[in-house]
Length: 375
Image 1 (tube, rainbow, N blue to C red):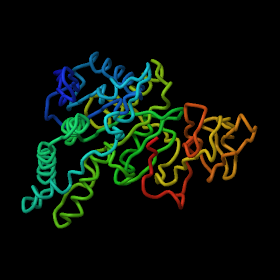
Image 2: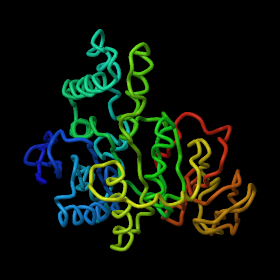
Image 3: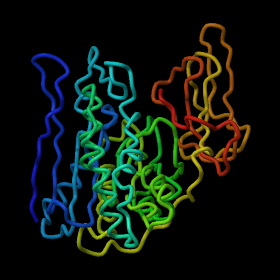
Image 4: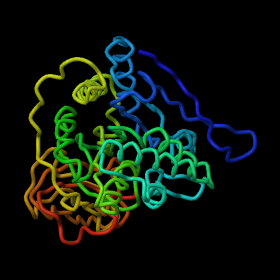
């Protein structure tokens, strides 16, 4: 097994500064299956960095076990890591323009379709190779305007041809959970079970084209475009893994997450060895529209009434919003029967802020358009 470390320079944003993306490759470039894992695209979400540290220690300890190609980017957003205001990291949004770092990834479908026109045949494996090559060419044709655009291009270049690509994030105060697409369910079931996910939410298009959907969207769109020729529906098992909450940065939690990732790599054949029986899945996958984002109707102190992991019924109070001047308390109630998945970290809300998430079973009628919060 070979291990290589590549430092990829980012387009300079100003005089006298430089940043780079570091990619660590285990195994031979081009070997199959290929797995890609990155952490901290939202730069202030740190649990994934420690989980990948533990995973890499396992890979370093048994290099002969690597069978495919494993590419790891421990710090996927050096721009956000450097954005500090009076000691606080501002890692979710680009301070130069305000965009969410995990939005606005390029949709490569049209550019790839132009390259593939008239080239696909009857062999699905050959078509898969051609499509991956076309996606790679589409990425190289991008002319990034900003440093953040260049970062997106680099991450797509490293990951577009992967058999599995995982984007490691975290919520604020939360249980482990996973976002992926309906095309990848139940293929992602073992991944969710190995990680101990309390919930899995499915959507083809959540709004804003985040990283994982930029890897999956072209495949179902190209399959529809070239319906007369065989193309695999979902050759890249891509998803966003929420590694609990922001404060869950400790060796025990990270080692547990790394063990789940290692078993997943074994199951896909990227690492030798038996992963063992697949654990029971805590809860079946649901549409992302079934995830209720509870919002504060007024500004105030958040007085939580139930802990994450609690089961609530529709109408149950999840939190009270307390106006500490007037002494008014306004209850925020669950709109469905479900699991309290997360609370916000700061116990104070402005009017309209998402203060908690409850995952139910059925799509809520008003959950349309942009399904993820950008706050």
